[in-house]
Picture 1 (cartoon, helix red, strand yellow):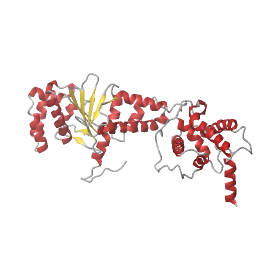
Picture 2 (tube, rainbow, N blue to C red; picture 1 turned 90 degrees about the vertical axis):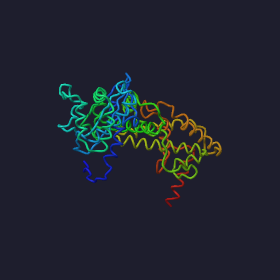
Picture 3 (tube, helix red, strand yellow; picture 1 turned 180 degrees about the vertical axis):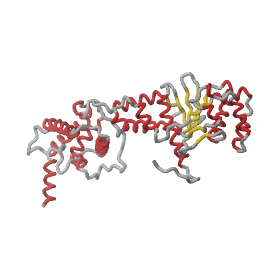
Picture 4 (cartoon, rainbow, N blue to C red; picture 1 turned 90 degrees about the horizontal axis):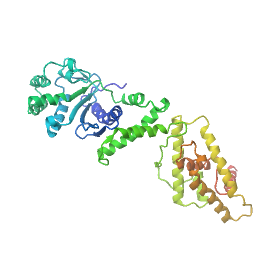
Length: 408
């Protein structure tokens, strides 16, 4: 564990607090009924609304290790100021609100805040009203910040003070930001095979981060519901079944600019040899990139069986060679160049347009993404020293000639 900074100007914990909000929101929605919704940074750090319409305003405090809440902790009273504003806005005792404080710290045993702990039963709470206890505490403060909050609090009647304070619940000793992933994986992903839980969690959190960004930037205006997480978690977990593999490079492109006219790789040279246009070559480069990177991702996550990729490439080669034999059947040494070129284009058209829809060419039954197949052919067409797949009937002879010249 990294050492805790003692620098008074360190913004580490504050920075963690901002990151903590979406990660904690994900965990909390998984813990609540699926029809619960959440908004981030609206009335409070998090706003939860249940099916009955009750809104819970949640303040999150990700504190340094060992931090404690006491009677006059600003963490508590700053939250009270936010809650008071919402309470007044929504009609005070008529408000359909609850107020939760989630903190990674602990509440001091001698603090009146013990009365708000979720673990406290009513019988364990003070015989005095919460309002009176709060008045005693506020009378002791010399903080300008807390005094201003006390002024707002004292605008409430006695009954309203009790009503307001009765809505507050403190959850202390909460999970720290780096504890949340293991809690989600261990408690909320039991339907996912253990060896794949980390990969599924990373995909889920990546999707969640995009949703949160859209919410905060206004691209999404409606709240996020728990059932959306359930649906997405189910979708991701299905990709890690024995007849499936995750598809994570759909729509992705290489960082470097695509140059269809001068890319020197063998599979691109082959396409130029048969006169394929620049736009189609660009698509081929994308298919190659996505298939290559997808294979690498599967390998890193140990999702492939032993020799599975080699067996898959053999299947691609076998199917290509059968179609090649049909297309090239009537060609011979005297065949005109234009006919050879046309045959090469026909063979490539099959690989480019038709092969992605052939179920027997899927690496696994439910992997239907076409770039896996198309890119697979380009990977074989890029093999060195000699390509396993080619399009122009005379391309292998040309490669051998070039290699022979280079070796002289």
